Length: 620
Image (cartoon, rainbow, N blue to C red):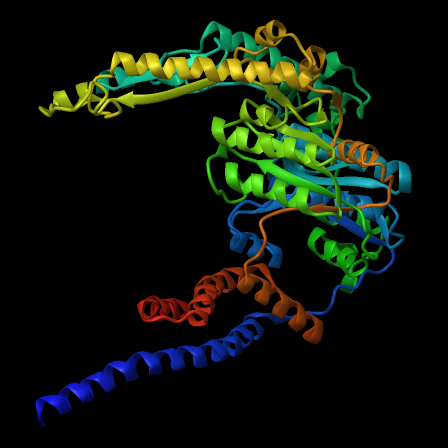
């Protein structure tokens, strides 16, 4: 074979391979869609459709952490929507939605509260549930029963929202009040030769104290005890309002738990029943029979007829009314405020701003409620979000803030220019102050014989190296920036809240307050719940009750939307449901297939290796 022929053959081969691979990718694109449907059908068990009969008990049993918004990436949130998670979370909005609907649902005869698997919930969120359950009681007159085995302090508050609390004979309960204890590292860092450089404004801005002290400062003790006493008063008042005991009696029970238990021969259930904190003691069989008398006996004469939260929400979804033209958008800002794009569970300067912008540009949205649950974070990201709040106001749409468990520091920054600020009496807010911190460790390296030296074109060169002593001019520069940021913060608060800047400075300095205390200073407008904020937003937008609520959150990708629509079609056609134990497999399938769909749609030579890797991941 001559050289010319060899070149021609090689050229054809070079052209043939990529063309063939692209054709193969296009074929695979269609083939993989069939694979997706096959896998979904294969991993899904066939169940009967949810049937809601009369005389059914609605069981509200929060699982895991109660949150304002599922955390994680859109894919992870998608999996949670399919049901369940390895890291349990229950959305507060879902609990409230179910309780509100059940009040007028003639098929629901009793509301059962089960706190046993509620891992964590803030007091402000408990107050939201308290309002919903109180309204349920007024509207429906249906009994509300709490069934419990073991309860922490906040689990008890949830159970106490019921008409009766029934505990197991082996029940465990414990109250500890509120406290603030941390580890302090100064001596340890000194021994390691680490230098901590803290720059702050506000003697009460104590978040970084553990790195520069061996104990809590007097200012931090003063501020913490001041707000915690008020918070405990709110908690205790919520308990005694439902119990035939005084505040003094309740606090005495808490202080004397050990003595009371000893007097009850170690029988904790009996101790708390004698103290008036629980109503009945029954084992599982008699608890279920008690509820069956208020509803109906369960299948096969076992237990009581009931429906859980997830199933009841699916019933509500199937029966929802036609959409209304006006919308009130709720945007959740929960977690630490960070720069850039962030997944749910954190607040991104860019991502949260985009959600606010989406509400502003949506013509059907007439008002916005920003639900804030954050202890703060990055200054620039906070300012990005606050600017978007102002942009919505300039567009003529009211913005109302609803503060959750905490809206402090950056959480207050993003709230301060809203048309109105609501907070629970259990909300922690304030902490108007700024700090910055970083560490250097040249002494640590010197201990093992490592030293740093070099040259630069200016005194600033290498100023941020952690293996060098801090440049004094850099320290001055950083402190000046922190001072400026603080002045900007208190000036913005003064302007937004129509207050004297001297007054703002006196209640700022990094100090934390409860919402009741903050209202006295003018930092918030009203003590109220999320529903109060929504009603106010509707009133400001002059739309009365003629609106739907929409939660603006990061949207699913095209691949996720395909999975969701496919799931819906399969569910409609085959009467199926996904069980929690299938979620791991679905998540394992979803991620690589999502990548595969994208790659085969835009197949290029450089992407084929990654594409093959994605296909391999499916089988691992």
